[in-house]
Length: 224
Image (cartoon, rainbow, N blue to C red; front, side, top):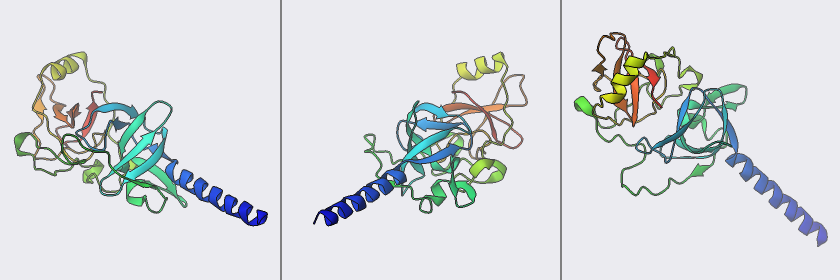
C-alpha cells in the first residue's frame, strides 16, 4: 500500500511539473515588443520587452495571436508572432508553433467594452476593417515573421520632428497586428506630411504615434 501511494504521488508530481513547464515557456522578443494590458490592440500599452530579452509565456489564446507574458519587470499581453522559441534545432515564431512547443491554451479575459480582442476598430482614409499591419518585406502580421521582424534601421528623429508630430494629432487607426519597427503600413492608411521633413511621414496606429518611411511605408520609429 505504501509503495502504491508513493508511486501515485510521484506520478502526480511529474504531472504537475509538466503543467508548470508548459506554462512557463521562455521566449525571446525578436524586436522591441509592446506589452499591453489585455489581448488586443485596443488595450493600453503598459511597457515593452526590449528586442533580444527573454520573457516567461504563461499561455496563448487559441483563437487570437496574443500571449500572456511576465517577467520581473512586467506582466501583460504580447503579440505572439514577435516572440521566438526553440523547437528542436530551430528558432521559430511562437504563436504559429505553439502546439509544437507545448504552450498552454488560455482563455481571454472578459472584454468589458465588448470589442473583440485582436479586432480592427476602424481607421482613417477608409482603412479596411480587419486590415493587417504588414511585416518586413511585405509579409503580413500573422505569418511567422520570427527574427526578421524589426529589420528597419533605427532613426533618432530631430527635436523639431518630435515636437510637430506630438503636437499635431491625427485621426487614429486600429489594425490587427502589432506596432513594431519594420512593420509595413497598409496603403489604405493615410500617412501625414511633416513640414520640411521629406524622409518621414507619420500616423497614429494602435494607440501609438509612429514615423513611416514614405518609400516603402515601413515603420522606422515608435513614440513610446
